[in-house]
Length: 551
Image (cartoon, rainbow, N blue to C red; front, side, top):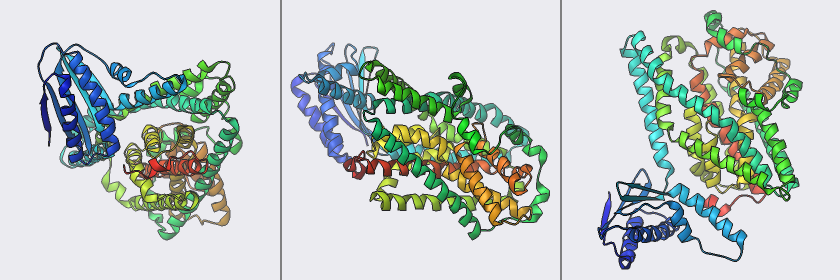
C-alpha cells in the first residue's frame, strides 16, 4: 500500500515530512537503523528540494514497497541537483583529514546504493531506498525460473521441433549468449582487481600470508571431503546398468572430446601453468590461475611501494570499484537471463532418451546437499557460528549460483552477501575469487559419482587402486579445471579413460549436465563462503554484530 503526502514548499514544514516518513517506515517494520539513516537523508533531500524550488508548488512524498523493499519518492519542480550536493550537506569539516575521508567513503557507498536523483522537464525526483530486501531479487529469480521451465516444456511438447528450435535459437540463445559474453568479459578484470586491491590494501603482509595459507588449507580439506562424499553417496545409491553401454554415442560426444584434446591430468603441468609467459594471454583465454598469479604479484608490489607511491594502491581500488559497478548492472538482468536459460534448456532436451539415466541427477543432488550440511557443521564447530544465521544471510548467493551454474558468474552476489554477513573485504575480496577458481567441491562430488556410475555401466570393478587414482586425479582436476565452456564435462572425459571407460561415455549424461551443474555450483560457492567466514572469524575480521543482525 502506497502512502502519500503533499508538503508545502516551506522549510518550516520539513519536520512534518520527516514525521510522516518515520511513521510510514515503522508501519512497514523497517529497522530503527534504516529509519534513522533514511530520515537523515530525507531531511537533506527536502532542504535541497525547497532551496532549488522554482515556485511554491507542493513537494509530493510517497512511501511504497514490494517484496520487502521500501522506498521514499520525492517530487518537486525546481532546478537540478545531484547526490553529490546531498553528500556535501551531510559532511562536516573535521581537523582529522583521515577521519573526514573515511566518512566521505562511507557516504559515497551509502548514497550510491540508496539515493538516486534525476531532473526531467524541470521536475526533481529523488528516490531513497529505505530498505533493500533480498526477497525481491529472490522472488523475481524464482518466478523467472519457474516460468522458464514451464515455457520450455510447453514449447517442447506443443510446438513442432523446427518452430521451438527457431524460437530458441533466435530469441533465448542470443539473449543468454550476449549476457554470458558480457559476464565473461567482466569476470577476469573483476577477479584481477579484487585480488590485487585486497592484497595492496593489506598493511600487514605476514597477516595476509597467514590468511592465504588458512584459506588454501580450508579449500584443500573441503575438496578432499567432497571426494569422500561423492564416494559415500554412490555407495548409498549404486546406480548404473550395463545395458546403457549400448547407448553411448561417439558423435554426440565429439565436440566435448575435441575441447579436451592435448589436455592431461598432471600436478606438474598444473603448477607450471600457473606462471604465464605474458600478461595479455591469460585475459584473452580466461586462464584464471594465471590471472590470480599476476594479481598476486601486482598486489604485493603495490603494497610494498604504498608508502612511497600510494597512488598505485588507489588506482587498483578505483578499477575494482569500476568493474564492481559494471557487474552490479549486469546482475540486475539475472531474472531475464534465468528465464532464457531455463527455456532453451527445456526446449533442447530429449526427454525420452534422458529417462534411462535420470537417476544420476538425484544422486549428485544428494551428494551436494550432504556436502552443504557438512559445511554448516564445520561453521558451527570450527567458528562457533549459527549455521541458520549463515543460511539466512547467504541464501541469495546460493540461489544465484543455482540459476547461473557458474561460480564466476555468482561471484558478485557471493561477495555482496559476505559483506552483509560482516566478513571483512580484506578476506572475501581475496578468498572468493580464489575459491571460484580452485575450490570446486561440487565438481569433485559429481566427478566421483559419474566415474563410478560409468564404471558400473562398463562392468569395471572399483578396486582400491582405481579409487586412489580417482581421488588424486579429481583433486588435481578441481584445481586446474579447463577454462572452456562445459569445462566439467571435459574433466569427466579426461578422468574416466584412466579406469578403462571410453571418453565417449559422456554422451549418456550431456543432456542432463546443465541440471547437475546448477546444484554443483551452489555447493561450490557455499563452500567458498563457509571457508571465508571461518577464517575471518579466527582472524577477528568478522563483525559478529553484523553477522547476527536480522537481514
